[in-house]
Image (cartoon, rainbow, N blue to C red):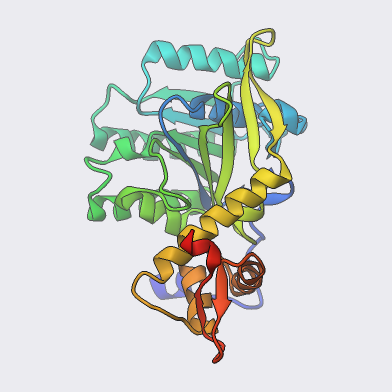
Length: 334
């Protein structure tokens, strides 16, 4: 009976969701969940994904520098690692696979790793193949360690179709739960601040446990990785990571974190944007109203929202009137 399967059994707690991808100890991709990577064309998303996949091909954890600043849980039991690509040509995907093997110092493709070219299929058939192959490889390899879908928007007719967007994100979330795995959804859109674009972006923002954005750095030789959403805490407190092409290594390499000053500037700029939007239709907000706005708009918890209010008062992004209500501060008027 469906009711029984949905009821929480307090005496038999579920297993804790294990992290597959973390940064500085902060979980981004976890079992039973979606993890989104987004960014515009030419920012290095496919190379970044290849670095994540590299970390799943061995029995021991690779240094974070080898996987472009991320900590990837290794795969000692040889569970399935699945990479679906909806955009690139077969030749390009073959080349990318070679780079993944090169980064992992492997000569041959592990038996449990499957890279699938979906660009030639219809949108309907792409999802059908993903469903059927996940079931097949789950049974063949005794489980699924990680799934990457590079080009999630190509599984539906339009990224701005609300009904289709909700359905595809719900289905992938369901599959992540069924197979107890992390599904990385690569979205080829440039985000608007800390918000993803389109209906499919909105759904991923709501359902994904973690979201990273990749964009070109001020130094055009580098790409910068910014957290837009994390499971615990705030994305604005996660360091910004850099990677770029190394001719001698013949692949992208980790270039460290951006400075503390750059991190603080990003934090201030993003918070100013959120506050300007929050006060677009209101001159003042109570403390509770402001907390609710920050929690909703930034996908953060109550304690983090309260920390940000204190930070924004200190930085003159917010000010208080004699009654204790909050208004836009000096920095929001510049």
